[in-house]
Image 1 (cartoon, rainbow, N blue to C red):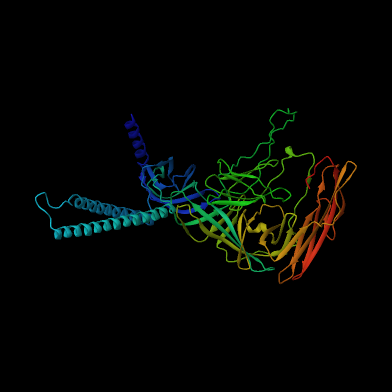
Image 2 (cartoon, helix red, strand yellow; image 1 turned 90 degrees about the horizontal axis):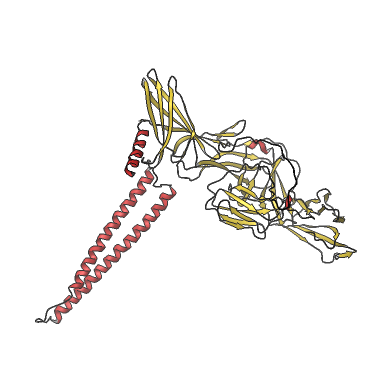
Length: 618
């Protein structure tokens, strides 16, 4: 029975591949954020009647429903069939063939050394079994005994030395084979030979020559953006390098092709939601209640090249959350945030990270970057009776001049379509099917920016240099990480998220250690007290800022006073000093100008009154 099944399988493959093999070439590739569209061309001569053509050595990752054929003229399509041929020999690159040839040569050399070692051992065994001299009737003289002993010793030593040399050569050959094998793994030279094949059956009433265009979508390919932000000094435009990291592991090399990068993703669920009525009813205390939440709008895409993810998890007020569970969805590989809300996790498999914490709404995000900072929201269904909340804001500065963007020799043609953006790359590229990244420069800009120092010591006792960019919509940016270079040195990474609804984009250029900020509580301030059934907490803070730089700076200082959301909690005796106080949000803002080696101190205080049998998280 098994022989019958094998015969039927071979017949099916041979029957599928029975069409006339047609040479085709990849000319154009449109790379999506996930996946790619391949365009192949082929010149064929079509006789009268029905003819089958076979396009072979294609990618085994073709999405069958995406196959299209153009350039038919008077011919008609009778059928299109796609299949995977597991018995075909996938063509290998010259580099892979050379490396595999080197491995075969090394294996032959190892076999030669094994044969030598075997011969040496035979000779050594022969010498050892014939060491007896003379017999019962004949006595060997001392001179002959010395000659034989010298020969045995000399020859045995030579043989063992030769065996050692051959063994050493074998180790060297095996080490070289291991290195070559690693290189083959880097080149993705696996032993799988399956290839995709498309068989097309055409019919025509007159002989004709066709220039067919075959288009289809493949998986295991894509691109993701990355930015370089370079600022030489303050009050100069920022150089923004917009780059694309293109990868593909489709099984077919893209040799000298015309590339188009598209922000579209045909694999996204494009079905619009249906809104049905929602009916309310009482819920039993023993019934399970699941709070539904709308699907969040994230434009992040899975990046298969991320090896390690690190970041910080904060709550809505900007306070780090320790003990947040960060797990690769679908696996047991995970970690927890430390006291400062930081985490680091190696990615072995999986495409999404899940963040869970008691009292917070769980978050799940695609692994899109090596730097993933998130802010978790409180779960309203788990809130306590008493809640004190506050808000953290970023630094603000004067409005940006609405200068137009300055483009530096663009290498692409940008086409803004209805639902996506296309970057047409002028230069032809060769991208092998090895999964490695090919870096393509999309564009270079000189971006007008307003620089500002910012600190919020209630959250982080560091001073950050920020740059605010106006009219960022014109840059066609996508959410991605950015490498920061300031004054010629690498300053770290940051995330650019152009999905914000603000009219400007603020990016952090890193921490300036030459500006010091300290937030302390005076020891001589009023002590806490009890009046009747109430407890009164007195709070006061001093913020000292010192500029150790050689030049003056402008700095925005932000702190906060808590806001009560319960009538039993009262905030009184608010002293905000010289700050610009927003009593609705409880935010205090100071705009500070600090000369070189200058320092300034700012003070504020308040009292909190609440029932003494309650607890408030201050």
